Image (cartoon, rainbow, N blue to C red; front, side):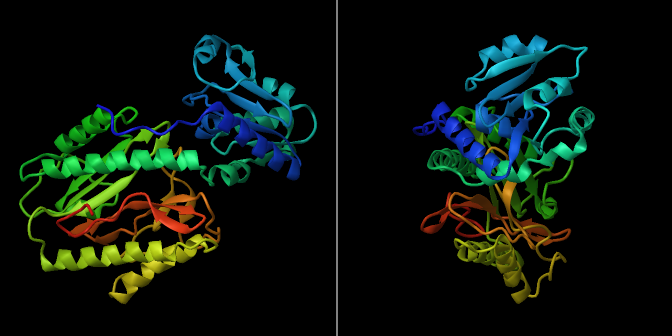
Amino acid sequence: MLFGTKPAFIDDAERLQRIKRLRAKMEQQDIAALLLGSTESLRYFTGLVWHQSERLLGAVITPTSLHYIVPGFEKSRVDTLPHIDGEVHIWQEEQHPSTLVGTLVGRQGRVALDEGLPLFVYHSLVRELGQDRLIDGGPLVSGLRIHKSPSEIAIIQYAMDLTLEVQKRAHGLMKPGIRASEVVRFIDEQHLELGGEGGSSFCIVSFGAATSLPHGADGDQVLQEGDVILVDTGTRIDGYHSDITRTYVLDQPSSDFAQAWAIERQAQQAVFDAAKLGAPCSKLDDAARGVMVKHGLGPDYALPGLPHRAGHGLGLEIHEQPYIVRGNSLLLAEGMCFSNEPMLVYPDRFGIRLEDHIYMSADGANWFTRPAKSPTEPFS
């Protein structure tokens, strides 16, 4: 059973426009070529999806051409996979792919490297091209990927709506005696049933004191009467991630938990209210911490309080630019998508993370999903 009507996926026409914008930036920055590895950036520009290994498979983009670099024995498989047109060059097992890269990029000009390339590839390229020619391609690529198109935002919205429905179903499953592993399995099955690619891309289910550990505890927990419940999960649609966290109790909350939950929700709202076009990312993190300090929590990263950044960008990667963190002077702009999750932690007692995501439009900040309603009503 699929969930609703899927939006149109990213097509070759959009990918070619991405490469056109990339080439314009390469010309402005006097860059002769960009080498992509088996990363999400390869998918972003070419549509080719490949998992990184000890063999370099990627692409070289120059101002006038697109070349794929493929291990010889993998070419037949690559031929079957979706990707935009480009010349395929193979290298054999006894050869060094850096030699092939050198041939494709020429002997002059700066070569930008995909920031996700393994270090062993970098060292090989240093020997082939010389260190002075190699530059960090991260800013070049992320400067494009950080601004989501309407098509990308529509896909992320669909993925978020799907995961929100899965969160609702998981909430209905909760009862004392259930194991965290049962809930994780159920969430994976529901993501898969509704059309999420491969089921859950990740899933954290924590009960009681384990909720104070931001990324969960080892072992299989059992839900006890009155326990705090934290569920953080997501899936992928056309490669784009969803990511939603809810924290709640099933019955009447304790006064301590209810008060803490209200503070967490205030901090989350403060982040949203600070999300203005042209505002630095750091200002949003400051807004969350300001709420904590007002209630005697923190300061800074001290606990009880907020132990990590207030949010992260999201797209083809679950964590990417822009990061909503102290010291980040990057200005919010149209098309940016990021989480709003200023988690509140009381060590060895409980943690509360309310995570919804924001996208910036020409009109300002917008929620992908509406925030939770109360400690016992995690959905608006």
